[in-house]
Image (tube, rainbow, N blue to C red; front, side, top):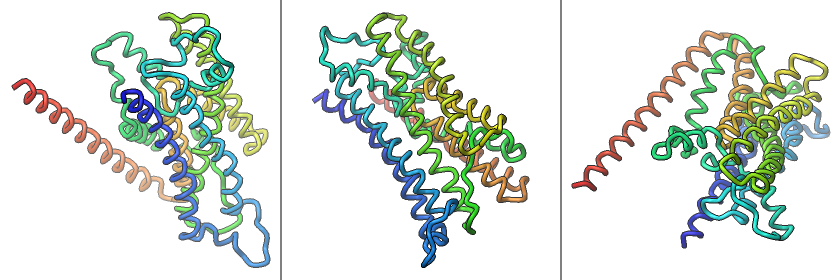
Length: 338
């Protein structure tokens, strides 16, 4: 029963990721495309689909989206090869394991949502204070989403007046008139999940190599430090991979290439630091959304004020919920003592 509960909890990571992916990169864009004239220019009788149209641009991302959804294989592989309390870094391999098991372990570094297993900051907190880890808050995906929105929302405020700080390209729908909502939904939600998913697939695959080395050769308290050290090197490779991937979009612009390299390195490091996909994904969405908004809206001051008010409101709500939960927990503790 305990194993079944553990398996159910582990597989909920896949459910979370698939829900976020399908809802944000398929349901919302298609819904907006059908209801807000996004697909209007793509369904003209007698004309073929043109490059730059909403539907054509959306279809080009479908391959990336399918690859991104394939990340759940890492979660399934981790669940099948590791038991409760085990991880791909310090759990030793059995003697003479089947090749299928070894292959599964190589694909068991799961960065969908596993801060307690592969989050560097969580492991640092665990090392210094086993009773009260300062990263316990990161175990809640919803809290992680809200904190990421606040943090990168502040970054978005700087983008409003300084679009050159953008670290990722935004696909432009140039051949037809679409609504602002269509432009933002397609330019931020679709590429964020599709491109990040592809990059996460590569990152998880590469991180399986240091996990294998640590589990096979080190297998002690130095396993995680070695794993994270090699992760930093892999992050640099991911940055250049991201920059190369975007060469098609940016051409020979050195500034854009190096911006995407920095974004790839920073996003990979965020994933390794927090042990989940959310911070990098939110960063990508907000980067693209604010670039689209700053281009479409002439009044930068109004956009800045509205964003600031929205961030303040989200922060107040988050703090209020956290204080309410702490008060509720203290009451439960008092009742249990009495």
